[in-house]
Length: 392
Image (cartoon, rainbow, N blue to C red; front, side, top):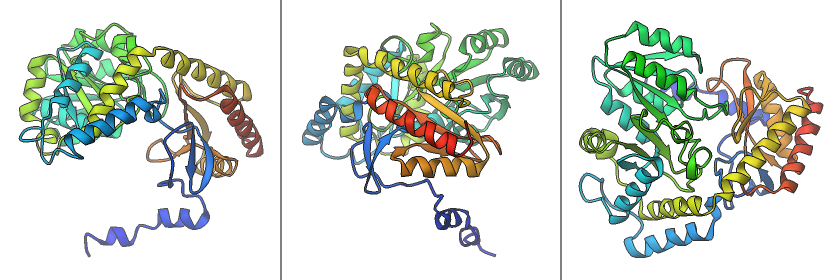
């Protein structure tokens, strides 16, 4: 036996490829906009996380270009040593101000921000409590931590309280997505905060899919619920509304100071490239200066939610720009993906292990820059294919 045997015995993806039902690693040869060129075909993009449509904004692109001209293409080291630029510090100050915290710390990816914070904060005898639908980066951070992870049923506050009651008197932190990335629903942060106060637990909120969507200036669900002070750590990413790549943790200065010196994901990774850093700084400015983008995002979201429901689609508890269409079995999800692709609509099928068996869905997500004509054209295709496959 060899550790390589599992690679040679892994056939699932190749079988899907042979059947024409392989929806991953699709080649896009254009900007990430409301329309893209995918495998040489022009398609309506209904599966992007660029909620505010800033990836193609001229100011964002120009900021990246100027940063490369001034700083070069990379930092050639970690933040801990030679990789801290003045624009990194500017970005962190802007992020802290945006979400209402004293300080912030930027990571090369959102994944590393979650892994780096959780693994640094949860010690050997500590507990970390997560929603069962939390993002994989949260779960991986818990696995890397030395403490004990407890999981509660999705958005089930009674289950959360049972977990907290079980470990009452122990050090613990509740880690939760602000907006759940597949279901499109929102964490019950008001009740989470009440339970955390009752049982003496701390709170960390992953704002990856809520930055640019909720709160004043797009600051996220902690701001939306007026619970910034009660939230000890606010995590966010740059790869959705902020049009780049990377992530951050915001918190009180003392907590960020600790992470700077204890977070292995930060210390042992090269720092965020200059172009990415500058583009996020500019995206934050635009998000504040153009609040109409967030308003338009919600107009598009509410329109699509209403239309999908009117057609007969099951959108679950979604109330955000992430709108799942629950289709049930895996083959229905793959068939719908394939047919929509043939009709020129780019969407993402979600199957196990990302969701439970027979709970497969089509993940759609919408942008402020989608026009009504584009949305209506997509709806025509969803209506056609939904009826063709007996999903609606």
